[in-house]
Length: 606
Image (cartoon, rainbow, N blue to C red; front, side, top):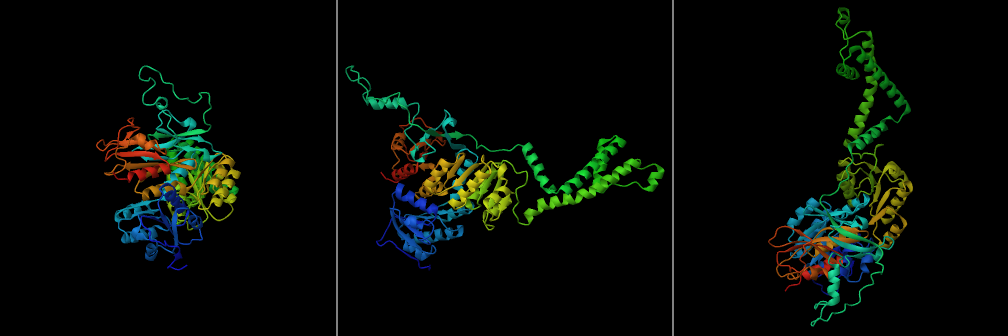
């Protein structure tokens, strides 16, 4: 492949289009979002149209062209008509490459909207300030909370001004829920789920009666009663399946481990230094001799504090011995048996010193040698994270911050996440041996969950199946791209969950490309619910609309409102007829198509 590139550039001049640079899974999902939900023309720039997801991307309806270049050069940007494009998404390549491409694109088109993927979020924030109209997003940071929460068997949350929104299922739904977000949930058939169905609240019966009788009410003029239209049979069974609702937590729940369990694990971990039977025999004998000598000293002196003091000095070899002149003058520390006891303690101290030194060197020196720490014998109730790419690193760090013990597995010694987790003291099992052997080293028998987040579906599934074979009770969370693959996974395994990084991150990238701020994504099994903030600008098509106008077409729920002069976010604002005015802000829970519809309405001018 040469730097000139080849492919099928737009034959006719194209404008007002969106450019996606990349051929990975995230690019694939992002293009689907743009062409299916936002219905905009898309031009794709790939490095190799025969690799990764490029062949599938080329077959997508709505893609105007797929252009192939080895890199995002000046010529490549001109080939995709960067000067007349409305937006550019950089979702592949390193942080440095994406920064260079974003700055180059801005030079060609100062008004273009640029969304670029960045692993280093702090650096991304600084680059945003250099761009006139840009946003830096991290796909791994967007998706990691869903994987971490799934490993703990609870839904992930999105923070909005000190409140944490999360999805609750069935019996966990409380009366103070914000709204129902899904029904007809069947884990054996994920296609039956309805996201954001018709709302069923306290006013549902009133709304039904109003729909049946119309605007004139149940009494016609003249006192004649109207008959309502036929209502549904009350004995008719409700649609089968579970429900999911959006609820609020005041604080983000943590997974603290009490100090007693930690102390027990530390003691068990220390036992790995005494695996030799001969070593244990020598040390136990020496310990028994020290205790016996300590008892003799205490019996002779009747002073426990002084006995402890002199015994510690003897163990360190620092006790002042009796001189011959002291014995003859009667000023020594004690009699014959006390001197014998001190000699015994000193000799035993010589035995303990090398062991203590070896332990200290092993514990303190492993980090200085730049080597990851192996899981100890006391590692219990932990989560095993397989794969230390961008996503695996984020998941491991988030679980560690929540107080959950973590053990990582990685076959590539050059993986970028190894240094990050090693800095936190997280154990890492390395090597390219069979999964069975690696999971045994990761102490699978004592783990609570396994999260497989490598970039390959087959590898993730292999890790999950090996884990379930080695520990039938372990919870498994698997990163899978293919929906059909995930459906079979749910049908085959219980106590399991599947997530797709691209499925979670792509809606946020698409919304950002349209100038909308997505605060986070919530998982409803394999489906995604977006939490977004929208501000009503002057000339926006949102002006004059009320909650009925926004929610009735489906796919959207207004969960909070901030009025232009109010300042405070009002949750579940009850007045559904109040019209939006310039300066108002709304927080919505929306499906991908619902948010796309709002974006279309918002850009319409009066």
